[in-house]
Length: 85
Image 1 (cartoon, rainbow, N blue to C red):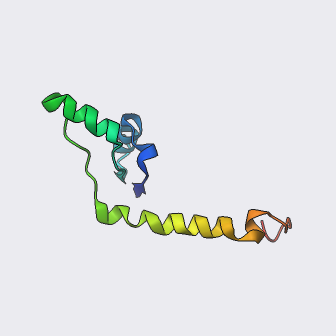
Image 2 (image 1 turned 180 degrees about the vertical axis):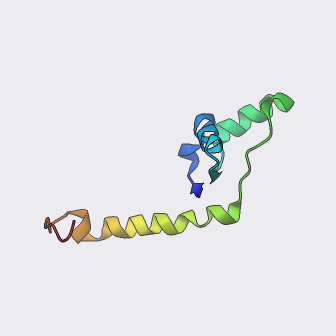
């Protein structure tokens, strides 16, 4: 439905792949991409759409992953039973 990614996923190839499949995305541009685009002037194209309000929801997922990693039972996998998997 919608992809929210960090600057590590900000590449032309990823954005075009998502666009071809009709997937909306919110990915901030890296500073070097902004610099290159502005350096090229009108040939650099327009900046990709970025919604700050949608990007704030990414924090919820990041905090969830952090919580799971800090939970010792999951992080060290002491319980290697069929039920816990």
